[in-house]
Length: 299
Ligand SMILES: Nc1ncnc2c1ncn2[C@@H]1O[C@H](COP(=O)(O)OP(=O)(O)OP(=O)(O)O)[C@@H](O)[C@H]1O
Image (cartoon, rainbow, N blue to C red; front, top):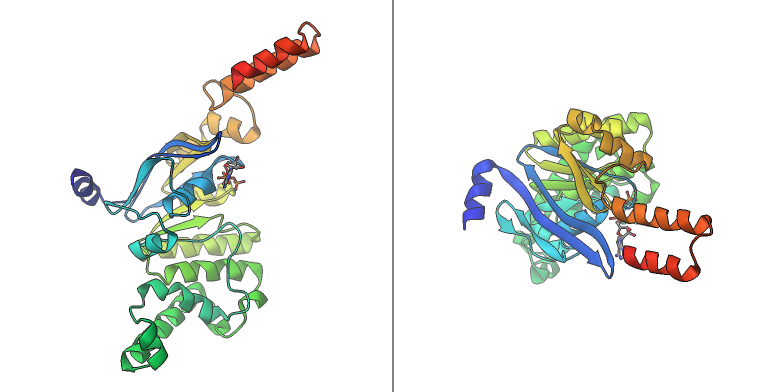
């Protein structure tokens, strides 16, 4: 397949093309193209409701995109989250999803299940194969805890960890599936400045282990420091993409965050039509019927 050859040759890990996601009449993501290359950290920014998490969900099999294609290392990703993880794409969530009554170590071990070959019978009989696999998983999980600096808390219940450590644990659990691409949804949400700086270092270290990273974040300083490339979504469409310097200097990005309309903005035509209709009705020159008809035009 041509796509496969091209992707491998250029070192593209993730290739999302023309991804559109509609919920009934709402288009949450519209024709978004995005690639992540080997060794890259790519940021996805945009105001609230821009479609960032929906786009992530389209990449990870939680949603099947209405249109578009997503490939990982040249192979189309299957439409089921556990198969996507197995293929090599792991993620964390905006709202922490740990097993709060399990220990820190157990949470990481859960993340290894897609990499454990031993089946149910082997687990029940606890034969030598199972014991060997269990020991290897345990060793790898402890390595990961050491990597995120939580090895000394392996036996603590996840719910007793401070918030910043819970976020790190989520990352370790995602890494336990040995991904080639890690998707992080707001990894620093709720963190203090020191924790945020530590998270930045951790993500650089993850990249240095050969794992490509795609990260959603609202903290602009964090994202512009961290990323090789940044894409900005506004109302479901990719508005700008480029190096941090290019994106942070783009006045359309600033305007989108401040809520200031700008020429060519996604949804700007509709917004202008609604504003015009409102202005007309407030001057009292328009009857109820004609206002309705104006709104109808904007649908
Ligand atoms: N399952 C769903 N059903 C219907 N609408 C949805 C669904 N999921 C998301 N949306 C809508 O899609 C749009 C994009 O939401 P999304 O959560 O992807 O944005 P976001 O950029 O991640 O926002 P935030 O930064 O606030 O997390 C919003 O209007 C949201 O209400």
